[in-house]
Structures are given as C-alpha cells and as structure tokens.
Image 1 (spheres, rainbow, N blue to C red):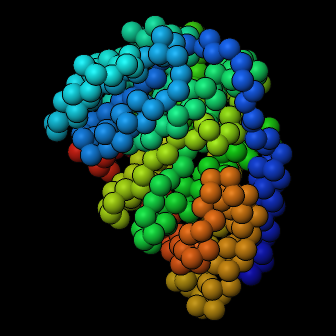
Image 2 (image 1 turned 90 degrees about the horizontal axis):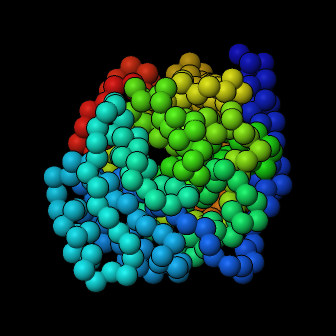
Amino acid sequence: MIWLLFLVFLVYAILIVILAIGFIKSEEFTAKESELKTTFSVIIPFRNEAKNLPFLLKSIEEIKYPIELVEFLFVDDDSSDNSVKIIERILPNTKKNIQILQNKRGSNSPKKDAITTAISVAKNEWILTTDADCILSENWLKSFANFIQKKAPKMIVAPVNYQAKNTFLEQFQVLDFLSMQGTTIASFGGNFPFLCNGANLGYKKEEFIKLNGFDGNNNIASGDDIFLFEKFIKADKNNVKYLKSKEAIVTTFPVKNWTDLVNQRTRWASKASTFSSLKVKLIGVLVVFTNFLIVSSFITASIQLVLILIIVKMSIDLFLFLPTIVFLNHRTSFFKWYVPASFLYPFFSVFVLFKSLFFEYKWKGRTFKK
C-alpha cells in the first residue's frame, strides 16, 4: 500500500510540475493599439437568469468597441421568470445591437441547441460565447480583436474568473475553479491543450459550419465547449490558441448552496468519460485516483496517514496554484481557505464522480442523465 501511494503521488507531482512549467511558458498577451475591424456575434443562452442579467447587461453597455462590428444574440431557453422582459426593457435605449431569439430544440442538450439557433442567424465572422451569469470587461472585444489580428487563430480559449464572497462555500468553489483555469492555461503553454470554458470561447463561424458544429455529441447534455474544442484541435491544433490577457477575463459567480454545487460539478464530470483524447483520460484517471487513495486511506488506514497525504498533495498543488492566483488576482483570500478546502476536496471530488457515473442530476430546473 505504501509503495502504491508513493508511486501515485510521485507521478501526480511530476504532472503538476509539468503543468506549472507550462503555465509559466504561456506568455501573457499585451495588445497594441490597431485598427478594429473584426466583427463579432456574441451568443448568450439563458434560462431563468433574472437575477444575473442586469449585471451582464450593464457590462455590455460599458464595452468599448465599434457598435457596427458587434451583435449580441440572447437565446431564451424556455424561461419561466421575467428574464426576457429585463432584456426587452433596455432595448429602446441601448446603443448596442441586441436581439432576443427563442431556442429551437433538437437534441438532448439545450445549450448546444441555443448556440446552434443563434449561429444560424449570426451575421458576423467570429462567434463568441458567454453565459448570462457573467460580467464582461470593457476591453473584452478589443482584446479578442487585437489577438485575432496578431495571431490569426480559428478558435480562441480565454480566461474565466470567479467573483466570490469570503465564505467557505464560495471560496471552495474558487479554489476548485482556479485549478481548472490553471490547468487550462498550462496545457496551452505545454503545447498539449485539452481544456476550455464556454463562458469565454471564440471561433470563426465558417469553421464551426465546416466541422458540422455539435454533430456527434448532441446526446450529451453538457459539453457545448469541450467537444467543439476537441473538433477544432483535431482539425487544426496549431490554430487553437489561448488568450492569456487580464482584459479578456470574463467574471462569473459561484452557486449559492451545496446542492447546486454538487449538481453543477456532476454536470461537468458527466462528460469526462466521452473525451476523445487518451492523454486527457489518463490525466483525469491520475487525478481521480490520487483523490480516491486519500478517501480510501481515511476508511482503511490511520488518520495520521490521511493527514500526511493531504498535506503532501496540498504542497504539490501549490506549484500550479501560485501562478494562477497571481494571474487571476486571488492572493488575498487564497491562503485563508486553502487548507480547509484541501481537506474537503478529495471527498467532494470522489462523491461527484460517483454521482456522475450512477445518478441523474438537476440543472436549471431540468433533470438530466449521463
């Protein structure tokens, strides 16, 4: 047992160090002023987001980008609250090109359907997707435009951050999310990209159509981002790039209770087994197995061993966490919550994995199976 633990944690440490090096190698993009000519269609699916839409709409009003070069396509996925009215309320006074569309369902994935619905009417060269519970920075579009003009990519993955209260529930989510963001950036820096986030994703419309969009994974409720990302990677890996820029960050919010958190993470975990990359699957297995060994040691071994394993894992994880918290500016709260969150995380992650494999989950008032 001790030799197995040593071997697994050694391999895990090597993985984290490789990722940390990849993060450091990923250069931060500094935009130079240039003529803004890229056209964008920003797609925002929503369902019962009345609480969050005012913050998003305010940030859209503050975006600095030529209005004739961008349209915002809101896709209503059968909302039962007053989300549509909130958007309609600003339409007479806004200077932005904002449209509200009704989702056309055709698969098991409402969000993929919503994006496909919007793309069918989108008139611009680049598609950007974000979520209704997000806040966009005023230079968000400008940073994308400058990056496109300099790098000429076909798909752009960009950072997402959390704005959280100083409570354990919300800071636990921040730390979990930071690990995913750090891994995403590191994978690009190490030239083996394997993660993205649909809350801040861009791609050329013509490439989406050429690759037949979401065809092939419409039976999976989630994954509007990662499966499309895998298609772009398979077709032309060198033209899928990461926009590491603070001006490109999209900010979102943690969920407000543990039930929603479990359902959200279960939704994310439910797509993992269908990833096409063997390398990604092996990394996932290593991370899961590392956490599983901690949980199983809690059941079969001594508390002292469990404490040692958690402390070792915490120390290893810092190699990737530290550059990530600097980039996403979470230095103030990080160390206050890092230790308690690290003790809970192995048990939480194993539980979520178990739930994603054997049980259904609820999201946005709907029930989904894997």
